[in-house]
Length: 267
Image (cartoon, rainbow, N blue to C red):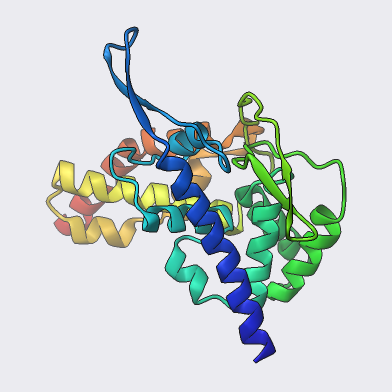
């Protein structure tokens, strides 16, 4: 019963954040931008910095609902969507709350890279309770950390829970580029590159309509291809630039696979 109560309290905390975010969006007022020659919206938020949220999460300003607000809050807490959050364990929720409350110290993406690197170095997989303890010891309880991203909050909740700290809005700074410095890539970073390579591969299958797609699929190995494109001589390399190379060079690799498919069929 105690565990269930803790889960409900944490979910109610996130519901309050979503409610406040939705309130901020309801301050929306249209205006005409003479320079861009089109209608835009302006906001008078109390809790969240709306403009960077709209940009970073590609929010539809014409149709922002309470459910949209719930999903945004869930993402800020490290979940993919609200339904994933409400089904999460107590420790996963508590870790999510730490991530949300400390977004001024570290982005959720950077935390994922950090914890995966620690797991890879030690050859272990931490439980959510273990991750919670590590986050608390390394980030939450340590001053001096500053995110390379953006703290979307205008009001930061502090202990005790009935007190709040107002945060002076700051100009959005350019996000620090994430670089690849070590090969081969592993974990969540490799997974992202494989997703991009597979997406481009399927796009080429559809657009180029090869004669033997089933053979090409058998020959296709995204990890081998990625290692051919992102080589040690290119390090260090910006992650986004590296992803663009994976997309750009795939057509040449695809043609090679198609030729191999033709030769295989001929035999």
